Length: 86
Image (cartoon, rainbow, N blue to C red):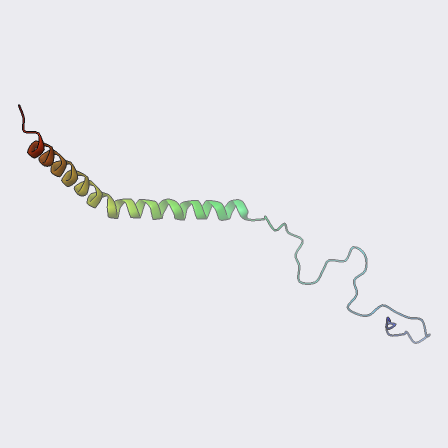
């Protein structure tokens, strides 16, 4: 069952004040695309990822290089123990 909207002084029914006419914008919503600013956001995000990667590399790379060298030395030492040079 529907309830009629408020009536005007002459008795004709009028639309409720919260109804929108055709073509009226929805209150609270902008007419901008939801994707607007996406390219700018990606650019900022890409820069942040790049800075993070550079920071991680500069922090961990020296340790990784030392570990690689130590592993190579241990491997060579182990091979020389197992298979002495002929």
